[in-house]
Image (cartoon, rainbow, N blue to C red; front, side, top):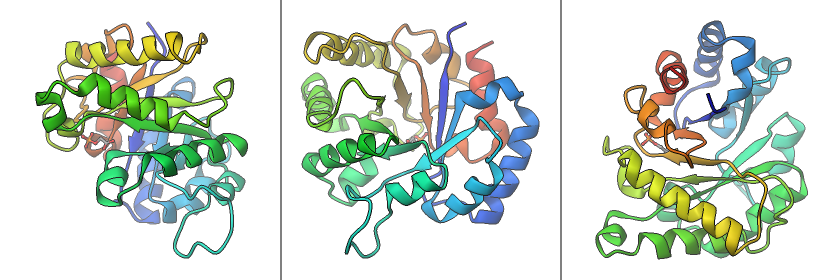
Length: 248
Ligand code: PGA
């Protein structure tokens, strides 16, 4: 059974009280050995709760976004440096909602990856094509360009992770087939090895309508190392069952 990473992106859902209640139930479901398989990305305002609740836990958490500087005159932004001081180990970078709704450019994402590595918070760079791009046969080009640009200022010897999230599969219930996902994961892996000369194993997660019902077939694919889950990570039972089914 290969080790899997199961990351939950709560987006803009949950109050600190709801986060606390989630963690209580979730920790009663998982074994202590399973804790390190999970990462949670709560809304930034729940950071204090995560920090308090997970002090003695192997369950990690991170931000969904941060600024590319740790401090400064950046009204309204989140600081990765502050989150790190509170115990955050990861930060999402370039989620498709950030790229599309908030118009984040590849250049900004490059700076965020670089900054996060410099403060020893592991960036989880998200990439993925839109429906239109897939139909036009641009998947490979778009995805590999996003990987190349996102990592263009990174120190490739330092920790980083990737998530392939086809935009058409996010929150739509339309999951990529495991073969479709595997095909892109394999392309990313080849690109890392052959173009970027990264020879150590890098975790590449799949995201987009992952549920307990489809996690097993995705996990059987050679190049899928885990999941980035939105909707199904909001309930402790379904989030736990994604890993349980995948390992069954
Ligand atoms: P979804 O979201 O699982 O609800 O499709 C995935 C994501 O946005 O990371």
